[in-house]
Image 1 (cartoon, rainbow, N blue to C red):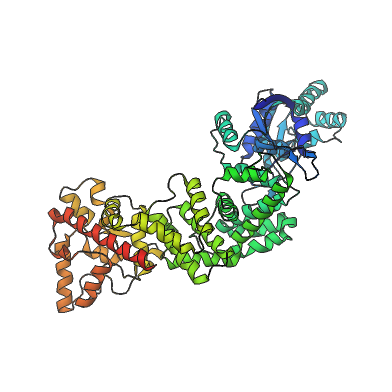
Image 2: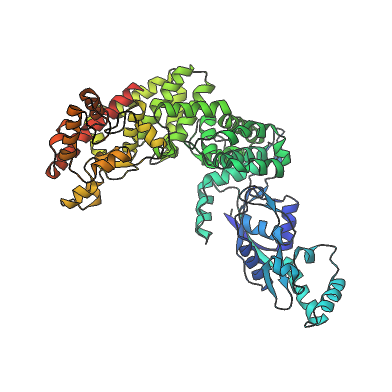
Length: 598
């Protein structure tokens, strides 16, 4: 059997298939991202009989019903949504949904005299040479003869015959040819993804999550559109609460549904620590409900695939949609989401700049939801999720092959009577003394401020409520929350003056501390030996020069909290490598104690 068929059809027939739901457009209710000028160019190409590329459909597999009969699979449009939506907007006069989930018309104008298309604007609206909205020409009730009479009376520079020829050419746009590539239902998701990438000249990345969302949205029988919108609206509203009113006003059916009541809380919840995309919502819901990692498995299950018999069964489709809906509802549940955020905050994750691994945070939420569903004690959930999240960052567990690792880990957590046993086994195997004494210290040898290891150090400081370097009461957490900046223990200009001109040298994360700006300005470009002598002096005579610390005990505690070695008091430029070596060991030790105390 061939992997695909290639056919030509007309714009008119294609739009008819869409209207009759022979081909399902999964994106029709999602934001239309084309600019109006691109819609104009598409119509101009059709008018000039230029090729406009292919659309790609994927046949849903035929599914066996319980009575043994076969249900015909529907074709899903997987590439060409924007072009089809543009044609429906321009020719059929359909409204599109913009980025803010507002419905609007895209009106294209046409000048028969110059045979030019333009997006309608106030100047065109007043110009009698333009047809302000070409959808009127394609309307079944359009009277060609009446239009020609009226137009020629207002515009003497064109004859009736010439105008008739041009109007007929415009109407014939609906008969323009458009190619359709039909992918066979026997193709697996990996092959479909590969085909899409190879034939998509625009270089658009289409993830397997996009295919899964397409499968979801076109299944009316099992609440697919409702599930799709719940995922889509939640993820968009989490980032832009202002779209709430647009959704409420423009999608009244959804606004009156149970799904909307479950997500509307998010418009008043302002935290940027975890802003999941639609693919994040889908991945987490799928992982914890189905105990699987690869999204391609979800695509197969939504199609009704029996992995043992390799048949497609309607009851598998039905069950998969029911489980996915439950998983999505648990993801967007206000209590679940807020409690998960509180667990992250309790581990020191108080700002989005501390989140560098979306995979780690996604798995942590999937784990949280799994443990909640299994009825694990609430306090135990807090410990397990907190510790696993930090462990996954320490080991960069989900940095490569995340789907297979998700699959492995979620199955292990589900199989343990006490999930903490699995955490302990991974800790024993991957976070041994060799890790803390060697690997972590080596990982701290970097100048990348977005390093997960520097984030872990800051999380440790937040967790332990540490005060900023040379401050008396301003904490590291307060500086991060107020968008404070990191500064150099060995000032950058001082190092540059003394031959350390490579960014990788002076921007080592072991040379960074959170410091108040007023402290940093007082330090200027002095060597640590010079400015720390002033600190020592102010502790003795209580005359403030840098910061507010006047007490020896306070100073000692501040140095320990910020992992500054005592040798700093005597250090000059030649001591910089030694400083980095000593501080990395202290930072690693702090991160170790932080992790073990979670």
